[in-house]
Length: 60
Image 1 (cartoon, rainbow, N blue to C red):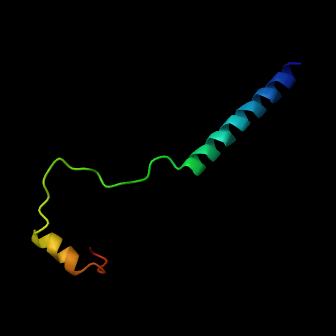
Image 2: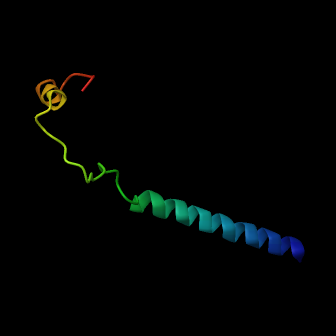
Image 3: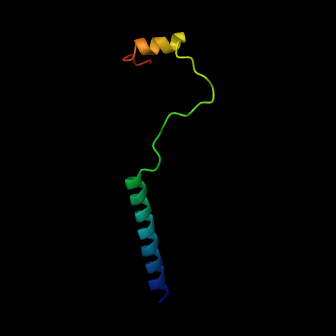
């Protein structure tokens, strides 16, 4: 009797874990986004101009 309860409990736990994994995989949660900054960023800095001019560069 006790063995049956353990097997049943393990089966239920496995089902819950699989359902949670599927829900996370399908739902995806939140997507990664750039952090909003409270600070002003100047788009005319030399580094910003360099990145805009060299968009295909691996260092950009």
